[in-house]
Length: 484
Image 1 (cartoon, rainbow, N blue to C red):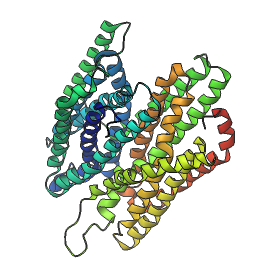
Image 2: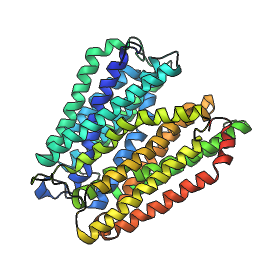
Image 3: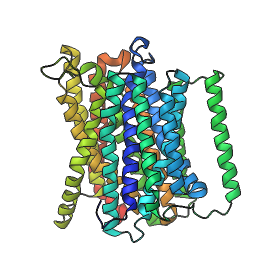
Image 4: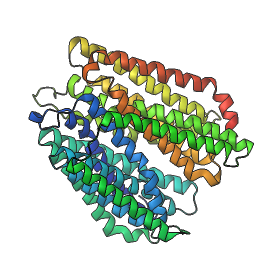
């Protein structure tokens, strides 16, 4: 951070770093902890059920951003939302540290809900620090994004080591301690934010909003009580399937409403078609990319050589989750410079072309891990270079697709629908995370013997989607009207 940026950016940078450390640190433990036997300190859940739970959890984090944003806007204001969201996250991690299966699910729910409340407010606060907008604001978000990835890099390093090598619940507790450090830092330096996000936006019906919030919280407490008492049990795989169709139905209803009843002009409808394409691309990309925490995490644990050369010590499987964050830190500035230079030369790829490249790189990564999986099934554990190469290609694909899509939605959507369109973008991410968990069931457990063929199936699907986007890039580019 330099003197060119508001002092509040430092507060948000380190708050986000600690929160992401806790989130990614805990995420690296989830599937491994669930699938380990009771003798190994785990829950002894089958691979398929664990993958479904993982998909539900990661999907819930993005779904929770919708009510979380509403609470920040209407009831608490962004500053208080960050504080209370962080408290809920810390409570979730400490609940996960309790060695009980029912509290495990409550802990996941708390982390998801707290993340939804904090996640939207952090980005809002960064934006409010730069009311003038422009390049300085973009630079501020770039610095903030480095805090995200620094936390994502450090989290698995600490929590996976403690969880896998010492005690699983100690790893979850470490994630909670990380969030507590973030809260302490936030409270001590909160005055640097000044009046940015201190109060909620004006609401026409504040009493009604508080009532809605009270009813919602009461329902959550009742649901938690029913779960702990055993009066209600969760069937994760069935719930994941039903949630998948609920998300698809919700997105379909919104796009139907937007095209028929939102009063869009012809040019706005054309751009809405592109947003629908972005929604599908996002869901497809994250369904593959998020295998990092499920099927690829199990591949790292069971089929990858992790013994340090010259010793008998194996590094934790969760450390592979550090690769993506480390590559983002190294490659994000390179990508930014590349896009600027290509733009000056008049050769900057269009929005649709970048999205297509993201999907093609996803396909290429799965092509590599499919070969690695085939070797592992035939000869035993393989070198970690197979996973490193896969993560490298997927990270470059992420840099092509994720930031570009996020920016494009804000430009393509009519001003009066920008907030809703961003919600739909995150809904696509949520659907992708859920599909990732459902897909992982077909790679692990009793399906392990055919995982190379299943990975190869992703190559064909993602590759075909990427090629189709390239084929229709000019047509879709015309619909963007200068945005692509």
